[in-house]
Image (cartoon, rainbow, N blue to C red; front, side, top):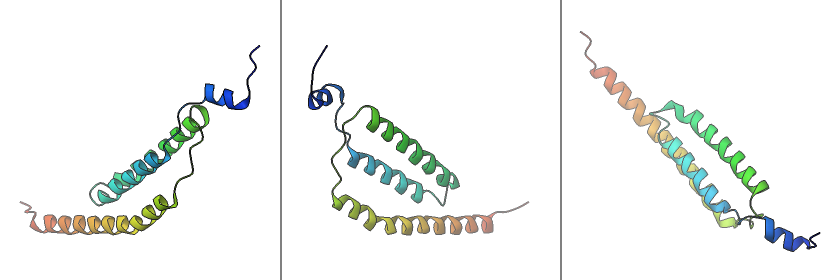
Length: 113
């Protein structure tokens, strides 16, 4: 029988620390891309929902089964995301407006024979 304390068992069986800041970066990147192309590709509403759900399940699985509990995130990362979120909305609105203007121009210049 092997006798070890909790610290030794954690060191033996836990994997590396999970980098949550990288996962936040990836999630915000997917959101930026989805909002940027929202006007051109309406599928960008559904695709990020699937990506966010899949990523959340994957990170939860890895965190519960393979990795150590990560250090808490710094408040500056949360501030950066909340500061850039309105700009994401502005970019999405701008892309939607450009797409509508392009579609109107295309339909106006379409020659039906």
